[in-house]
Length: 199
Image 1 (spheres, rainbow, N blue to C red):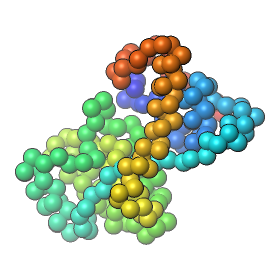
Image 2 (image 1 turned 90 degrees about the horizontal axis):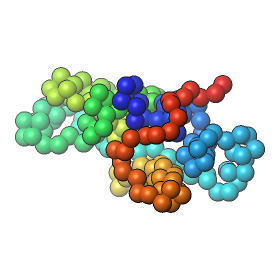
Image 3 (image 1 turned 45 degrees about the vertical axis):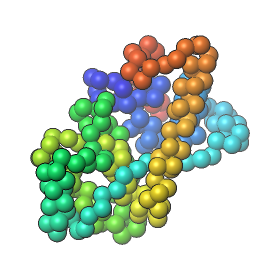
Image 4 (image 1 turned 120 degrees about the vertical axis):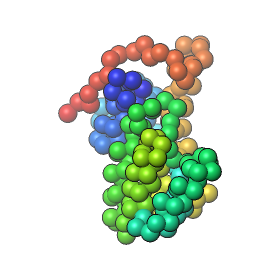
C-alpha cells in the first residue's frame, strides 16, 4: 500500500487501474513474474491453465433501504457494540481504495439482475456508518450483495473470495523462496516507484 495515495498496488501499479484495464491472467502474470505480459507471453500463460476468475465476501441482511428498519437494524447493532462486518480495515484508515471499483461492479451487476434494492441498502448503511462511526466500507461490503445478485450461496462467498487471493499468495511464496526470507505483512517495500499502466 502507498500511504500517500491510500492506494493498494501490485508491483507498483494501482489496483484500481489493473481492475479496470487488465484481465485476471494479466494480473496473475504480473504478480508472479514482476511485469505485465506481452501478448505472446499472455497466450502461453493462459494456455498453461491460469483460467480461474475471482471476486470477494459480506452481505447485509436487512430489508428495503427506504424502510426505517435498515437504519434501525444498524443503530441497534451499534448500540449493542456489535461488530459490523464489511466496515473498517487495519491498513486502509482513510477508506479502502479497492471499494470504488467494486462498488461500480456491484452497480453493473445490480442493473443486470434487478438489484436496485441492494444498492439502496448499501447506500443507507454506508452513509449511516460514516455519520455514526466515521468508519468506511472495506472490500467485503460491496462484494456480498454482488455475489448474492450473481446467485451464489452465502456459504460460497469466502471460497470465491479466497480464489482471487491465491495468485497473490503464490507470488509471495515464490518471492520468499527465491530470496530465502520470510516476508512480513507490514514490511517496507523496496522496489520501483508507483507506475502507470502503459497505453
